[in-house]
Length: 139
Length: 107
Length: 125
Image (cartoon, rainbow over all chains, first blue to last red; front, side, top):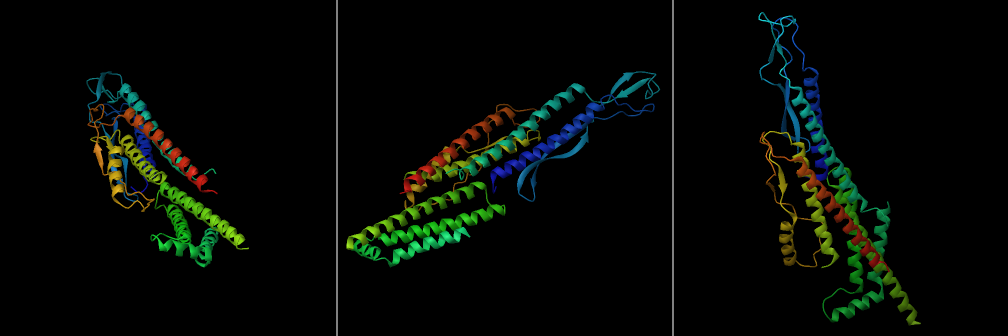
């Protein structure tokens, strides 16, 4: 790579962006943890997932990371017996979102950790460039 | 630009080296022994080194602005230029000092 | 050889440290990429040995300021743990390595600055 320190900033920036997207998806899952359908037998909110992928940035030739796509979790819905619910089917069962709030919270904490680690990489790369430039300063 | 002014000072050093009698006689003396550089030769070498590193420093700075090289390369080129220029100036000062002493002796 | 050789080695070391920083950046960014294995580069002293031999062979009058020393490739490292997704990046380990790099780079630039100053003041008349 031409300038490894500049590449570090670019790579870590792509990491920041990817983790941001992941956080958005996790927040959406958490917000919709109890979003059922409105009509009888209707499907509730389906949990969303993010897939990371390593890519080569064409302009600079630097290997960055991106969110390949935002998919859905094919795990089965939870089912609850609640005959008075508007989304209850003929047997009185309501389908609930396949979102586990505890898992989403843990995911959120991990996303935070990764975000901070990427940020730390950027700070350090910048600091190293500053140290180099400071060689020319002073008497 | 400042670099051109410095380059012309260094070329002046080279000219002193070539034209001065002290330099000529010292190279003549040196040539009887091993094939080492005379006083004038050292001046020329040091002056051309300095001009070379100055140009390299300039080129590196421009490359950096164009985004082609790293900050490390630029800093290294600039430090190298600083060192060779300092050396050239010190040698020039010594030459001038020596010339003045010799010209005082003649009288 | 003295300080001239030192500038050469310090320059290579700085370059190596920068490359390692980029490797860590890649590891940290790909901490959640499935199938990604943590990477690291060859230790600097291995490269230093070959470089010393090369310098002894060429003429000592040939002073180069640019470094021809490039770490010759990356190797997959043994991580402390493997996560179930097949991804082996450990953030703590990467942050520790980053700390090492920061300290080494700091020392490297301090040494270069010091030797540069010494050279300049020794050449002044």
